[in-house]
Length: 271
Image (tube, rainbow, N blue to C red; front, side, top):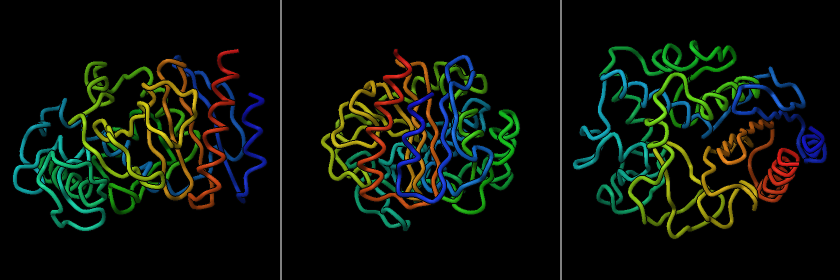
């Protein structure tokens, strides 16, 4: 894909990127796609997928209590538990605000570990990484932000998100629809959004502006980006997913470069 060459112009030291189609074929890739990079918050979709598998296995339920009083697993996944960003401090009642929370995902990881009888990192490995062949992916700390992976692994995960094998289609569809609609909140790096709609662990494109995906990304696009300069988006309407990992933290360079890059990728896919 010629559009992937745009990453060569980015002000980063190293970048790996690729695009996968819904049938699992790689449409293109560029850079060291087998090299592992810190994921930062792109860890969250992997954690969320493990949580959804735990739901299907019967280890946990979406509406069982977890986190602050009145909160559930569903609240934690949807950043609606009321927990603060980086500490287990209650800032609002559950379901009242979209408070993006690393602490909420850490509580979720502990909840799953207790329910399954194994450390969450091991559950993630057995439930998600091994079945999908994610050989470069591991969790070494917080389920919110301490994953590492390669672009090649994220493309395999992207293919799963386009055409799920580990989850029922209905479960993934629920996870990528708005949960607790209408909640306002801050989209990290892009300011306050009204509403700041979110799925079960997945950031939803909807009609947010500004946003880290493209102007031509479909409203059904979902995924996540990380402060380590990483992103994974899945656009069901385009039938494709794109994973990009860099060695430069997110900043104004990324907020400018990523949407234009995504639009170029989508234009080439539709040509």
